[in-house]
Image (cartoon, rainbow over all chains, first blue to last red; front, side, top):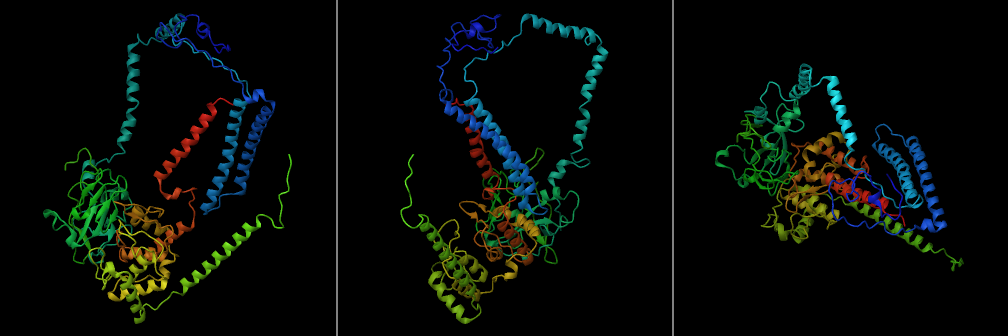
Length: 357
Length: 264
């Protein structure tokens, strides 16, 4: 369809003969007074067309680029051999990757730039119009296509043999069912997911232990201004489902001046001489909130900058979180170790559909 | 094409710059050697009454305006009774104290006192009440388990200081500083004393050996370059994304423009 007329005045006339010359090929819209085709701008010769020296130079540039590409490929092979990856030496991995990569980059980029430069500066410079096809086929080919469908239907008996057709539909509907059932297997089987989201490992008497060692914490050992990252007793030794439990039960323990704490009346006995424990899971989308500022008593979530005021029962003072961080009621046992009084009194972390509170 | 003779004198024109460079290197090298010497010599007896008296004089001249003549604190500055020598060595040794101006937090700056004066100040403050002491060099010069230190750092420190120790922003102008050039002693002292808004990590929360492991990890990251190539100041995905948006897309656009432009 390409057509090589520099004047460009008879594009429409040169298009498909089956169509009105006023209708632009490829559009269904009939335009009564189309714009007059302005044609091509005047042909401007390139310097490589007019100056033989420049043409020679362009030719040299392209050749050099292709040779550079060869050099890059050879360099990549050489780098692979000269800078091997040594065991236990991360720096050698980097050197190896970097030098092979630079060689391969040079090899590919030089070919690309060379070809484009060749095409732009040296190949024939002519303006031409690449005609579009008309969108619709001819009447003849449409009828032929419809006939193919009709013949296929007649020969296969797709409309006539209803029993076969229905059983085929049934087979196609049944085919994805195993995938649905297999996906169900990813969810907890015999446990209620809502119950799992509502409860954590903490229960009455569970000792607060250090993350990651699992050593129990004495109340007397928590200095004023401390922030301690806490997991429930027994979590460190778990082998199965450890991360699932940790994701819900992680707690940040802080010790403030008792006079700085502004506690709700119903939570008066949830802290122990200025030591408070709050869930580390942000109520926005569940990031670990642990950027604790010991002088301002603010907790910052690094993901979306929600801020919680620990001195004021972790109420939200900035950011997208909607609820305060849940508080873990704590006390000490006979040996002076910090223990939980109960589980959290509300689900930790972000909202979910069945969340009651 | 005519070529005039450039040489006019006996000497090569670059001799001047060569000599200048040599002179600068010699001066700088000599200075570094001497100042290293000075640091090594600054060991004062922290327990002698003379040291404490010298420290008291320094304190009353430089710190008492805010912290009070008896270090009892004031409305603008906390009491220093019981903060210990470690706190003084950290705050004054990193230049955070004396504070140049009120702000969200005291920034690190060149230390305002010599090592000897810092030791005297520390001895005076430590004499007021018992507090954290300056850690022994065996705990602060590395040699621990870097992998264990990395785990502890990720759990206890990385949320503020960045997993590579590059530092990060906190609220309202405060920030966790970069640890990329902080000395082992200052890292240890910061954990023990909890300067400014940093929480305290006492020896029962993170044992001295674990603190040594953390310092070993930080020294490892300070001394080994990132195996993944240029780290973009370890600022993480935001810096990397911005870099690729500006430079990666910029290069692609430039190449596209070049490919489609008509040759000259």
